[in-house]
Amino acid sequence: MALQSLDIKARSATTTPPPRARDPIHVAKLIDISKCIGCKACQVACMEWNDLRDEVGTTAGTYDNPRDLTAESWTVMRFSEVEVEQGRLEWLIRKDGCMHCEDPGCLKACPAPGAIVQYVNGIVDFHEEHCIGCGYCITGCPFDIPRLSKKDSKVYKCTLCSDRVAVGMEPACIKTCPTGALVFGTKGDMIRHAEGRIADLKERGYANAALYNPEGVGGTHVMYVLQHGDQPELYANLPKDPRISPLVSLWKGITKPLMSLGIGLAVFAGFFHFVTVGPNEVDEEKETD
Amino acid sequence: MSTMIQRYTARERNNHWVVAILFVLAGFSGLALFHPAFFFLTNLFGGGPWTRILHPFIGVVMFLGFVALAARFWGANRISSADRQWMRQFDDMVRNRDRNLPEQGKFNAGQKYLFWSLVVGIPLLLISGIVIWQPWFAPFFPIWLMRVAVVVHALAAWIMILGIVVHVYAAIWVKGSVRAMTRGTVSAAWARHHHRAWYRDVTGK
Image 1 (cartoon, chains in turn green, purple):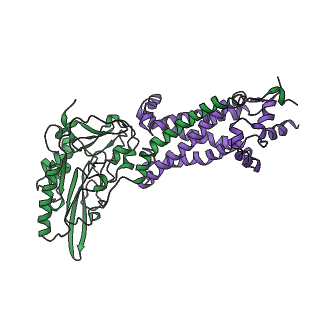
Image 2 (cartoon, chains in turn green, orange):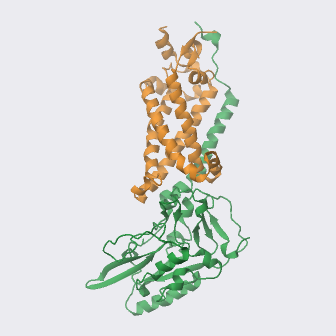
Image 3 (cartoon, rainbow over the protein chains, first blue to last red):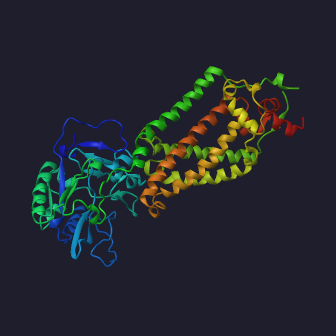
């Protein structure tokens, strides 16, 4: 087997179980929005480590730069100006990118075997060499993360620096964050760390401070500490209760085996009908008049 | 040997087979992307990315071919009360008790219902297919609509495939009918037996 840290837990378009002999630790990235100053050092570190140079775009009059995730920008800071209390402006800055869902909709939707994998440590990774460019993962993702490249028709997103994590390093964004808003470790440690931060925020008047680790997708391996945990939509429309769309679950769940079975049964029904009643032949003698 | 009757012209036969071949290609490439059990079919099309690239183009050409075919056969596929009676006698039909069935025109009720399901299903496949056609058209549609489209596309394709499985089997089962679509002719006895109203129409008997 390959590196233990790259053991695979789930693989797209694969109906048999992957190797399950070992179950190493689950990792998570914690993004403490209350500590983020919006410096975008994480965006730079991501570009640098992953060797990505997106096209220079244009400004839309906000600090969002680039304006959206692209095949070459796997993380972006989203700036929201909100007034939760009248007259008290808050600048909420959310580092957007793949959430590394425990139950990944992209992987569920993907038709190409092995194009999307989930490592046992929880990281969801795209293997572009197996990607066929169909864009099904885009329909599967509850967070609108995967981006189809216009250059090569492959999809890209944050890898949680799976290559760095595999050799015991933290992701590049974590390494560079100057305020400690980004931390990385085991999922258990990150939840405990978040609890300390939430207690602190509550003391400072943020009564609804909470951890964002949405149950609808089985929890995520990228979590947020939100000052306003009761209103995640304030943070550039972070979904309150993300889950894989029931349409995608229907399409990639029960219909796949049932429809395939139906087609198989139709073919067999024809064969056995023929064996039972025989061909429908016209008696040339009797029919002539 | 009884006399032969022209059932399909060369143009009709060619049009039918263009649609048929493209349907099989679209079906195989579509199934390859539907269930991992069929992913090996991508090998017929030059691999996964090529299957994804070719499938929609095959589908569009099939749609155009089907429009022409549907225009040719539209009039002969109107459902009559005899057709509804024929469907009620499903049991007689599958047990080869043809003599109990009401007489049929150029197409029997089974063929007509297949025709109308294709008339509904193939445009549905085209519309839903355009919504999810990467990279050309899908980026213009919201994600929720793409989610609806993938389900519509799969369901419509499934019904079309089931219909065509029955269609192909019926051609194997009912002897003398493959010849109609390959050579264009059927025996007078065949026409009299299976499509008596049409037989009387063309022979004046």
